[in-house]
Structure formats: C-alpha cells, structure tokens
Amino acid sequence: MREKQVLPVVVVGLTAALVAVVALWTLDRVVGPDTATASQSGAGEVIEWKLVTTWPKGLPGLGAAPENFARRVNEASGGRLRIKVFGAGEIVPAFEVFDAVSRGVAEAGHGASYYWKGKIPASVFYTAVPFGMTAQEANGWLHYGGGLELWRELYAPFGVVPFAGGSTGVQMAGWFNIPLNSRVDLEGLKMRIPGLAGEVFDAAGGSAVRIAGGEVYTSMQTGVIDAVEWVGPYNDRTLGLMEVGDYYYYPGWHEPGAMLEIIVNAEALAALPEDLQAIVRVAARATNTDMLDDFTANNSESLQILLTEFDTEVLPLPDDVMDALYESSQVAIQALIDEDPRAKKIAASYFAFAEKVRTYHEISERAYLNGRARLLPPVSLTAASAE
Ligand code: CA
Figure (cartoon, rainbow, N blue to C red):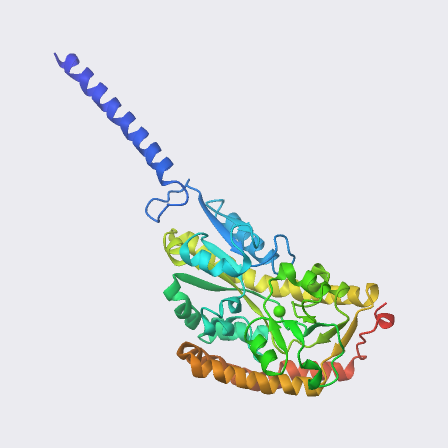
C-alpha cells in the first residue's frame, strides 16, 4: 500500500518540477534582454543596449569615445551588459540622437549637448560657452562644482540622464577660405559653427550654418559655406578639411573646452541591477578622461602632419576679430539668460565657478605656461621648422 502511494507522489513531483523548468525557460525567453528589469536580471542574463551617436561611424576621437565606453561596460560587466554602437544615420540621423534616447528607441547616446539647443536652450552650457571654461575647468565644475546636478535637472523632464562623455580640449577657430584681417572680414561669411557660437557669429556679421560632421567637407568643397569649425588638427584631418580650407585659424574662442555627453534613457538605467548602474557610471567617467588624453596626444601629432605634409597655413585670429567675437558673445549669452530661466540658473553656477577658477588658474596654469614659454625656445608653426 505504501509503495503504491509513493509512486503517484513521485510522478506528480517530477511533473511539477518539469513544468517549473519549462515555465522558467519560457519566462527567460519572453523577458529577453531588452525588457529585463532589476528583479529579473539574474547572473547569467545578458542585457543589450543600443547606443546612437552624432558622429559618422568609425570617426577617430569623437567617434572612438562611445566605442570605448561600450567596450568598458562590456568588459567590466563580464558581458552582462552589451552595448552596440551605431553611427549617425544608422538608426537615427545625428540631430535626432537626443529624441531617440528620450523615447527609448535607443537606450543610450553620445554627442554634443548644444545640438539640442533648439529644444533645450540651456544645453549649450554643457558643450561650450564662448570665452568660457577650458576642459580642466569645466570638469571641475561638473564633478565638484554642482554642474552635473544642474545638467541632470535640465534633462530630467525628457527622461534622459546625462554623463560627461569626453572633451576635445581647446579647439581651433576653424578653416577659412579668405584671410581674416579685421572684423569687417566676418561680414556675410557663411560658416558652419553650431551652438551659442553660431548666434555670436551671426551677431558679429557672419552667417552661421548648421551642418553635421559627415557633410562639412562637401559643403566646403562646393562653396555652400566659406568657413568651417569642426574640432582641431586630429579630427579635422580625419575629415580632410585641409584639402578644402585655405587658412587654419586659432584659438577656438567658441569652444575652449568642448565637452561631449553620454546620455542614457532614465528608465533603462533604473532597470539595471545596481552593479551594472555603477559600471555605467564608472565607464562614463573613464571615457570622459580618456577622450581628452586621446585628443591631447593626437592633436599634437596631427598638427605636425598638417604642417609638414600639407603645408597648412596656421594663423592666429587678429585681436580685432577676437574683440568683435567677444563683444557679440556677451550679448548672445545675456540674451540666452534673459529668455530662459533654466539658462539663468545654470549660468549663475557656471560663471561663479568660472570666475573662481580663473583667479586660481592665473597663478597656476597660465603662470606656468607663460613661464615655460619665456624659458623654452619659441614654437614655430611653419613647415620648415616642423620638419
Ligand atoms: Ca567644434
């Protein structure tokens, strides 16, 4: 009697176990990587994210940063969070990256915040402010001066979480097809120059044009524009701008330390287990630092190549042109602050920090660079001396 009772119990037990295994397997299949949440994400599960960028696929420097971010996340998570990077136009065009991340079309993005200034005017503070802070200064403001918190507040209504995603350092003023001798030469000049600097350029008599990186070469070549700012020797050489621009002016008054951003869909980030969220944060921080290192090394290298192999004419902007651009920049910044309460709040924090750090950097960075310039042989920007 006892044996007869045991058999059905065993059969029922085995059947129940089989049903449970099949149910778990099915659940795992149904949940899949894209819909995983913190509670469902077990040790063996793989979560896949799409990361869209504003850069042409494979672009060194700017385009390398999101690839490095993805690689770091993949490695640090042991493959549990896999990020696939898409270039501009592969899923969405360059200027739709923010909307794509906001809507969840992609979980993450990499680009420059000032591309969104039509939607979020105050976003310009998170790429570059004309005559504003350098990369080192802006990083201090972001991570130890309250800047990042204000950035998170700015993007929160869109369900987007920003992280600093790199910096190019001081850029070049750009490539011009006419020499600039005074502010009069800016009159009617059509230039690819984005962000708040575009408005500054307009106010100084020029005409700013908004063009994504993938199109600047052709626009210069066909005369759609007379001038273009892109980044600096490293990325400008990649786009071949030395072939379509006659005069290469410095310094990048408009982008003294252009910051990039890694943006993440807020829901996708919150759905990650806490350790993966930490990996995203740390990988973003590493990417931010790494990009500046990349640009520092490769801008220096590419400048030599431009001088020696392409005989690029590298010239300083005349004081009169700098003065005109500075005057226009003050008007444009004030107009932005007057029009947008969020810009006003961020500007208060930005400029308070900028003034404090400027005082310190007068006696540190600048004093040191001046001292070194006085003592070492002068640098030369001609091909002969570079060889
Ligand atoms: Ca630029």
